[in-house]
Length: 232
Length: 403
Image 1 (cartoon, rainbow over the protein chains, first blue to last red):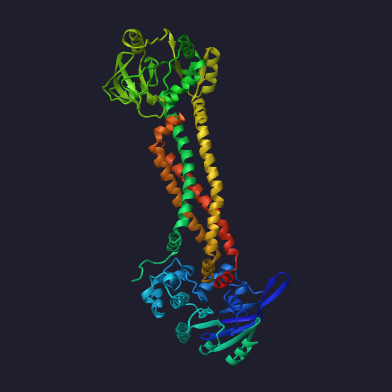
Image 2 (cartoon, rainbow over the protein chains, first blue to last red):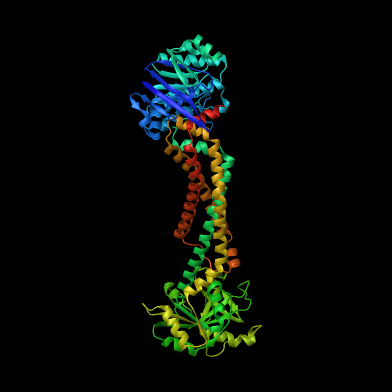
């Protein structure tokens, strides 16, 4: 499904070079729910950005369904993202001038003749429990409702992969639970999910867990070792 | 209930525009100003030129010969119908008729009337020699049944009278038999009669009028000349000046130059205003566009993360700019038309220029140019912010927006 090999991202600040991600290897198979745990500044979001082709790696490669994305132009990567990847951000990322339904339909503009349609958008809003609010503008929605709309939007083009960057970071415990249950349901329906979080309590939803610390990635860490890592 | 429309590019653009009303109104106003000033310049110039063409075509002459001290008076008669009386020896007419290249020559006598019952101000009376005339005669041929007989008069469109009415000039009664079409020139403010009746009117004036009219015997005011086909009016004009001393030549081009001179200050002001408005507007619009782009940086980064290409983002920002510039352009042109048509007579008399509403083709060409210019300005002002925004790393922008 997706394979990252030797991914490195270096940022230059003044005279020093900072390695945000240091030679990371990850392979995700179809149907997996992969969680990447790490505290703030560990490089997990940069890593996720490189997986989605939104950040160019300094070295290393990313293959999505066999396609090496570093060989593609930015527009071709954008097209690949529109077709194969659904994205959920930490904040909702809804467009304020569009209704909930229009926000869900937005990615269909970037995937001509794709599977997304108004009917499927309505259906997705029903699935995330937002069918009553399809005409509502984002400013009138709660954080949890916005997140649900954002998840529906990520699914509209029927992507092979759902990438979520701290999707529950700004939510209260109850809403976090509802959202994670939704992710779990999607995974059970066959959706491959890669999620980054700083919350070790979410490990229970994952089929595989990576830890990230100072740009380095560790495979299959346990919750205990992550907590120990956080205390360092 | 959900909204029943499909969601597409145009709806996306319209949502982006309608949800930022105040800033967009300012932008539309700037585009309206640019289009209005540019269109006004074009409209006035085109109206003056068309009026002059129509007027010269009505006069039917390639060259107008006047006494050398009365060039500006002759121009004033033709351009704005400012009443004037002036004369030179009739022998000039005979000489002019014999010059090689002259196809037809027709003498005219110009008489400034006194305040007449017909009009709020004096009008220009033009007496024609029916044997040689080619100013009124073609019109008479087109209007079958109308003849210019004894004491008959044909009037310009601005002389507020009807066919069948009587008009009294210098105590002599004339009968209106026809009204010429509007030309926008001095012809509209003129009345045409025959030489014979003008002389009778002058003879009677000492008894019937408050002021005696003198038409010196054997004198005319101007000679209209039509040149042979294929002959340059300039060469004939030069020959006339050589052979008939004491005369000056007025040509359509010379009149156009005179009009351009009068119009020049106004068109320079209008074109200058357009330039000034554009110079101020481009950075202003660019600044507004950059402000919007900066505000929407995160939004655009999200769109790109969702799969929009750079081209799509540029297309989107240009489309928004074009929508605003087209709306502003139409509003500006429409407002300019209302003002220019509504105050047409006032503008024409204030500027002392001949003026007629330009043809539809001319209006469309002027409107199209003004609209195109607004669109180009809109495109230029939004291009830089669009390019700048797509150069930024979308994910970095999104991450920064989270904190």
